[in-house]
Amino acid sequence: MIQTPTLIIDEDKCRANIRAMAEKARRNDVIFRPHFKTHQSHEIGSWFKDEGVDRITTSSLTMAAYFSKAGWKDITVAFPANILEIELINQLAQSIVLNIVVESLETIHGLDNNLKENINIYIKLDLGYHRTGIAPEKEELISEMMEAIDVSQHMTMKGFLGHAGHSYAATNQSEVARVHCESTRLIVETRNKYVEQFPNLLVSVGDTPTCSVIEDFRMVDEIRPGNFVFYDLTQMHIGSCTAPQIAVALACPVVAIHAQRNEIIIYGGGVHFSKDTLDHREYGNIFGLAAEDNGESWGDLLDNVVLRKISQEHGTIQAPSSYIDLINVGDVIKILPVHSCMAADLFSTYHLSSGKVISRLTH
Image (tube, rainbow, N blue to C red; front, side, top):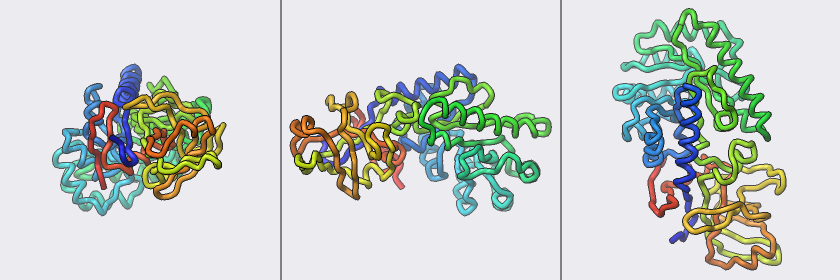
């Protein structure tokens, strides 16, 4: 019985999302290296193994260590290498194929001076998101980095890695397609400049919007989407998924009702949803949308039942009188989140639609 804010995973929807992306990778004959930062769960990781996945991505070395304990032996940490964690890098490299991302000569030299084990290196390119990575036009720097990797005793130049995170700013599939075409062009052209000297360079890309919307990935070697495992309202807004594909909801108890303000107060705030918002086409700025409760899972989105405000523990749902009249204090409302990665990261356990409770990595 749900008594406090609870994150629920619909296993059937989740497995269907995994299966669809794995099949797309097979159709394109590309490596499917899903990013596990969204779910961070051994149990859900095993669902990927059921689809033949044997290589994964994480966003930290700590996460890589967590999944290595579940038998994952080929892991890319798609975050700029932190040389202060060299002890963990060496430790992991003893037992798994460890792929590390760099974007500076300083990091390469720091690794080279302290590595005791062999690792693979991807150079991170900025494909337009402007968060991290080297601009593709900085050919002299890229060449210098590749040469430093090539002469290192413990580093092997693996390829180029990019993340078209600006696809999250898209509001339709055409915009996603434009981001995909431009970001793919940049990384493939960069690889082609060096392929004569390094003939086995791989191109690794992958964000959920492009990997969900685009069908043709034959120009690249590897895709690394992550959020698709759960999806969320942001992905629905972009056009990456439909509402029935969203595999995560937060079940929140009703603690007060203010019918005169058309408001329901739930136990569920920023420490459960995060404070990410979505500028919804119909409802404006929102923190979540309520769905029909059909028992262990949920059904269609409800019209005009919107998580409008949140503070630390409180959430304020705005709803029409016809819905409020059906709600009592002590009821539980299921709400689809704006950003499933951030919401999931706030919980130490997940409740599956089957009733089973599973654990996840906690920091």
